[in-house]
Image (cartoon, rainbow, N blue to C red; front, top):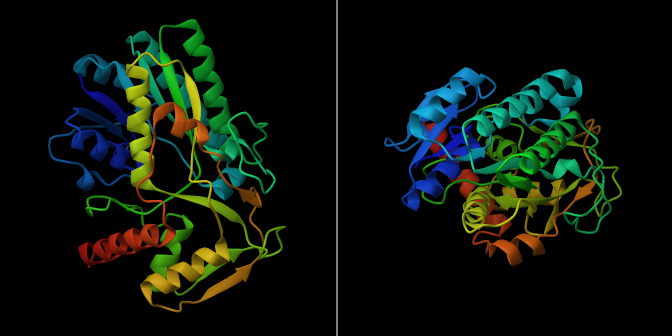
Length: 328
């Protein structure tokens, strides 16, 4: 039976669709197409346009295709925006996920893969953070995702459904074959913004704060290639299919790079010494967050294949040039 991928025309969701189709899996996508790009989807993937919070619509799709497995990516993800619009984030990320979980239970879904975030940890120390660390999100975005994790945990205890929640660190890059990438033009991901600046699509980029307690004063993050992340979801699905219990896993490499270091790598890869302005901190940004990823490697057998920052930047650069040519 097909796997339902919500938000499957979006950045990470579309890479999950590609990873599944590359393995011969059948896929159904639900996406409201606000930020999604349906043209990146393979032509044999069924796309249903709509809201994951609309239970009548979602349950109709589940019944139409006999869905028993869901990978849920549909969400809003911009931390500063969540600070200025917390209720919008709770409605979009938490309330709609609650409705989706209820629909899944009603329709007999057996396996649920959830797109969570390292933002559930909050402002942690410089040491890599493990899944059993204290959960103290500092933004409504992180809280909205943590609430969804709790709902999944409780629903799985009450109903015959198993789940895996994957806590992403900073996702970047693009499909090595050039089939998909970060397509939304106003995305706030650091590497995309830097690459767009190198291509002249932005006059400059901003660096939000250089007074953090880090090695150069800018925020430190763990950057994971989107293809490695998609493969982690496929591994999680295989784990549940083999009878694995519900679980939570970090998705990161355990390698921390500062914002200033990333900017220098983008300059090196693109060959453009673009302008980067130093500005004040943004609300909701932790100083440092790096993954401890032993658990996912040991339990799921996940093996990253693209854990090199220059490769990640190069993939993002190639995709952005493709987008620029496409939109010319």
